[in-house]
Amino acid sequence: MGDGVAGQPCRDLYIYYIEGRLEDNPREGGEAYIGNWVEDGYSFLFFSRPAAGAVARMLSSQPGLSLVDHYQMRYEDWLGERFQPFSVGDLLIAPPWDPAPAGEARRRILLDPGVVFGTGTHPTTRDCLDLIQQVCGSSAVRTALDVGTGTGLLALAAASVGCRRVLAFDLNRLAVQTARRNVDLNRLSDVVLAFQGRAEEMALLPADLMIANIHYDVMDRLLASGAVANKSWFILSGLLRSQAEAVMRRLSDAPVDIVERRDQDGIWHTFLGRSRA
Image (cartoon, rainbow, N blue to C red; front, side, top):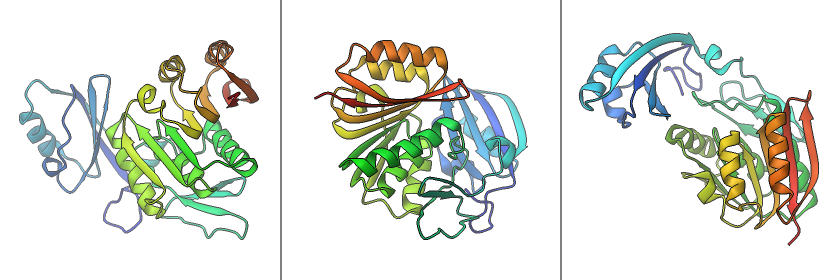
């Protein structure tokens, strides 16, 4: 995501909040158009400059939609942080506008989050990054699934530490577009495939490792589908304490073992498990 300066994010975001599911049409949005986040019957249009005229044209082409509100905020305020290089184990994650040369023992991942949440600094994401390295360093993990990939970071991490094939999927189209851009940015298109799909359906695909750092309601459907049964290893994260207890109850009936359970300050919980098969 840029504002005309190579490699730099736009300074300000202009966000238009639409009631209804607006079909994405970048040509109508113009050069300042960043993307469309669709969720729960609402659409959020992102621009790098004011775009009232473009939004009006987009709405006129799809009757039944209406503008609820619009906002202007700094890009860093939208992300909730100033994204700077950081490391987890042997991985160095850095934005392309501040790449920070990798040290001798580090594998660098370039990450442009665009307007999709998930720079990697959340405690659950850090735990996932650490556990991906732990599993891949101690076991033959050739294939991986990244459920609800978001920016694609966890898929890129799996590819960077040795997975030969990674399927990264998300129901949100803008997240998939962002993940694909990051796959290309890291020249890993021959290893990572990012596509749009439902978690509870795509997670049934066999793999050596499944990574799911997702909302609990999606996690619940994923576990109900039996997706953990055909995975050698799985990492489940993004869970608050009560949600983690519910996941434990579900897993107690599955042919799996919990190898490690982590919590960050008693709030965020992450599981590492493996199949008994």
